[in-house]
Amino acid sequence: MIQERSLLQKIREKELAVSVSVDQAAREAEEIVQNARRDAENILKQAEINGALEAKRLYETEMKKVQEEIERLQKLGTEEAIRVREQGEKQLAAAADYVIKTVILE
View 1 (cartoon, one colour):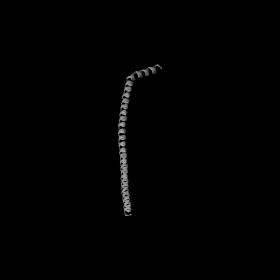
View 2 (tube, rainbow, N blue to C red; view 1 turned 45 degrees about the horizontal axis):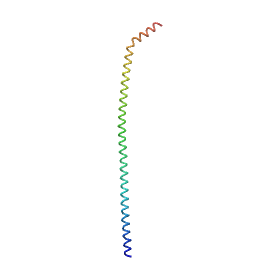
View 3 (cartoon, helix red, strand yellow; view 1 turned 30 degrees about the horizontal axis):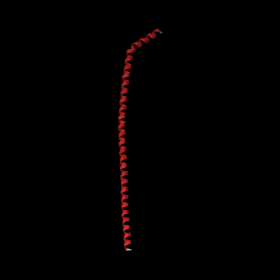
View 4 (tube, rainbow, N blue to C red; view 1 turned 120 degrees about the horizontal axis):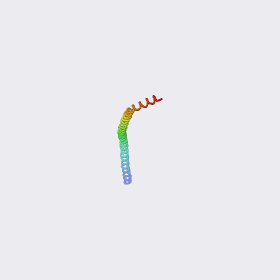
């Protein structure tokens, strides 16, 4: 009987040791999961920050291009207005003569 009790006692001790190991492994696994969640959250936050910075940079780059195009078109418009005014001034005398002749002939 003593030998049986000793064998049962050894089995119980092994079960206890295994139970402790399982509990330890479960705690370690939970810690790993928590660390992974925290890391994933940090990665997402950093990605949002990087995305916002990249979006701002892209917006500013495109706005600069738009502003340059606006300035180019304004310059072309101004040049066209000057050209048309100069052309009109050159033809003003001929236009005045035409109007005068037309009015006199009526």
